[in-house]
Image (cartoon, rainbow, N blue to C red):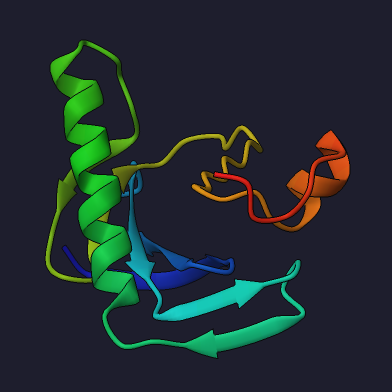
Length: 112
């Protein structure tokens, strides 16, 4: 699948059109942010890890009969996905309370 025009860039990925108008290419980045993007850095392998984790999650959902935009993982940094209208939802999972979660819930930082 050929990467064509740039569509979007976020904190963790870039999205491109492909030669198939119904499909897009997601490219995972090695960048990381903290404190609402006030701190930025890059770490080798983060994009690959994000691609592996999200691919596994989408495959799990598929096996449970839940449709997603995911088509296939192409390589370490790229996924092929269906072109869809995005629903703006963000999910953050933490094992330790920190940042805005502490503020919203009124709890101390560092709780497990």
